[in-house]
Length: 230
Image (cartoon, rainbow, N blue to C red; front, side, top):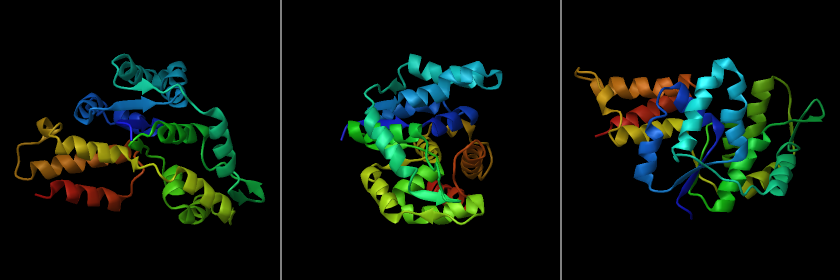
């Protein structure tokens, strides 16, 4: 295993929007390894948003992470493998007799590169991709709830996709916040009151959820309880 984490677009955007992106350099120091993004993630974080006034400053914050060496761009992308797995994933489910694009090529690119590099984990919030990798049997029900229509699944293709990408460990942005809290990085935000730590943890976790982290209310409460254990 290489001492490296690969980041998808979502967690970085969530940290920027949550005004917590400053924890990444500190987490990297503690981790002692590489933080990578792929070219597709760089385009989504920087190239496209730079042309949109509303998102331009967010793009500059992401660009600064690259300039400061916190994030590095992993250029050795196996494009044929990405295309093959993209086709496999998006022919695994059908709605109205048409294939569904359930995952994007950029997400697959990140996971494929993480596996190729022998990275320890993938930092990803996107719920569909995580579920596809970790528990593809639940995908059909998720898609039917999302589109309110019957969905047909090709169980063999879904199983093959999960098997090929299933060796990667996935971390979410809200779990990075938990690590930052455990490291004491957020201690300066603790209010001077009896339950100050609880106030901080709750505020930080809900802030992350409201800024894009794909977690349920129940998961927020579970993480809060874990972090406040003595």
